[in-house]
Image 1 (cartoon, rainbow, N blue to C red):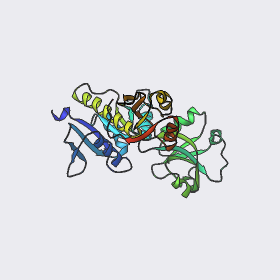
Image 2: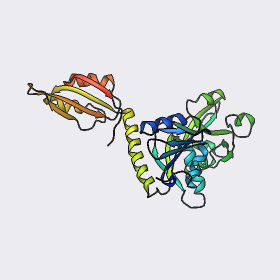
Image 3: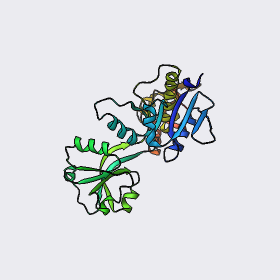
Image 4: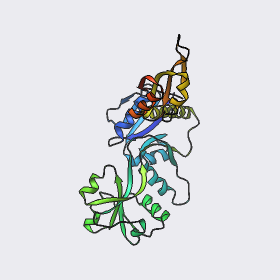
Length: 299
């Protein structure tokens, strides 16, 4: 393939999404050789290359055609989608898949002493944020008239400096808010890492690579929580046992030679299996139960 036919994916060079992005791609069967300047990774197993960039630059690089896909926080992508669509034109990039890591939330926080009840209390107030488009959109949807103070740096100290009454910022554990005598009161956006793409996917070999990559990503995400459950039981108890499995797929049932009513069963469950599930299954007639992790799965 020529270099134009190679799929390019932009990921965060460093930060909370970087290592998890590389791990996801490795689990999808991709391997890379990093350049000396550590800004480019050449795909060795497939014609897929990586660009290592700042998180905020990913959507713009997709829009400019520099890369075809990007791993970016939903907060960053959604902020830029709102910004690019301000003139009524559709955004040149979109969310293609949620990836299940890097979870956080964009929230409004107020001083600990503030007695918060509902969003109407934000009316007439100043709210500092680095996500002005998302905050303005949320305020409009909640029919709240407040001033959005756009800050480029840390916003947690804005109330103490007198530049804002409240803040709107990313929250994970809440430790940063607590350290600044702030409390989270309203969630503007639930965020996580997402796979971003252009408004239209390429129709050449890169489109085929994207389809393949999406199938593999779906499989990797699915096996994170999925388990293979195996057990023996009387055939007459099979229906009752299967009803106890959380989000279980159709089971495979195999007769046990020499035992007319006994079967060996295996089923994939797409949710966690707890000890309580196993105890309930045992009471329903299951025995010799095994719960095994899944390494790879492709539908």
